[in-house]
Image 1: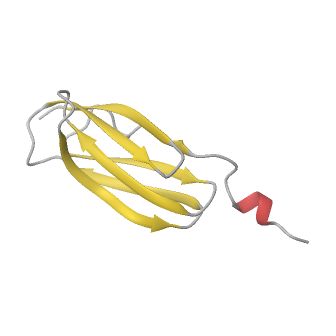
Image 2: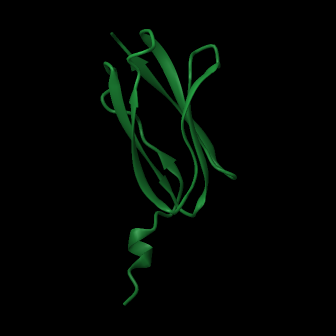
Length: 96
């Protein structure tokens, strides 16, 4: 019996970070339904990229990331997951 369909996700997704608001670290997960080039970047509200935390080719599956914002000021930040054929962005709140 082949259980591959139960293991490989059927779509891309980016989950909301937890906790939110956070101080100073937060976590979020994302899924890839196929192997792809993956970039996860953090932006401030002006749209300026402040950090890239993933820039790699990854296999299909679910991944958990953690971000430490201790060197940044309190505020709203955006995190974006980009692949060759999918992009999504979520908002998070850092409160010192």
